[in-house]
Image 1: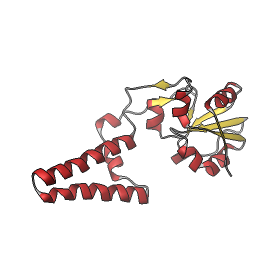
Image 2: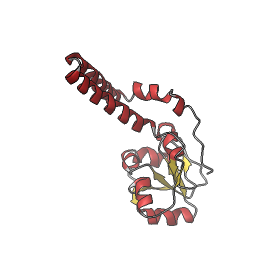
Image 3: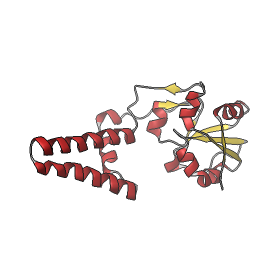
Image 4: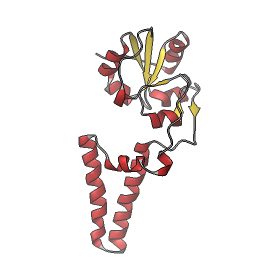
Length: 175
């Protein structure tokens, strides 16, 4: 089953008429930036939504996660359901309001990308300037990224989640 993709303007009209807006991103993403009134229901822990919803609009950052998981989202909705075309990024481009809390840490996966990239560059530079064996650092990080992509388990993300700046509980938006 596929869900109908709708524009930010059409989604706003539905929400104003009582549709439920559901953010399927992870809690750290939702805490940092969200559409006012959106309910956080991460895809990783999505279950059935309330029966009283007359319509549901799902969104993620860019629309890729909602599109890729449309059958699962439709099953959770139990009512007329849509996906926000282009996600929260399109919502912002349309000039619609978002709540941003820049005091929240950046999303774990962005932290992984930054850390992995820095370690790969460091390994290359150290192999050029110090000893060729440092290229193994780049290889190790690359192998870890491949393992994470294949298995869905990312050791670097788990490690970064334990860092002091990520230990604060994300503030939840009022639904």
